[in-house]
Length: 91
Image 1 (cartoon, rainbow, N blue to C red):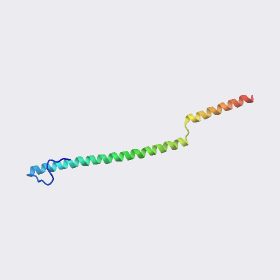
Image 2: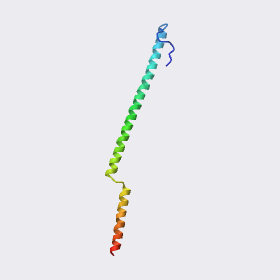
Image 3: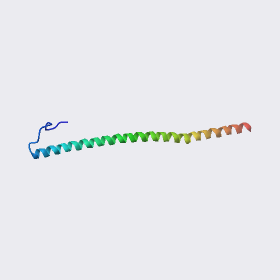
Image 4: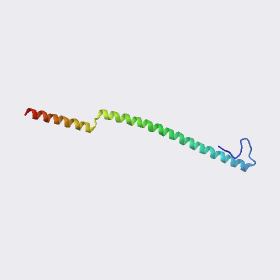
């Protein structure tokens, strides 16, 4: 970061001192905004990661409790076909 006045040099009057103070305040405010933004971005990344883990876990548990409809339909179709074949053989 470059400064217009080197460290340790005093202001040459009250107006220059006010100007230097205002510049320092602006630099600090910008640094603070950037710092808060970086902190917030890191927090949001952490929350998104945690939510991803939670959603994956929930989806896995749901899939284990509730088999996919196509698998169930396929199994039911196979069972009906087997019953049909067995009935034909008996007749």
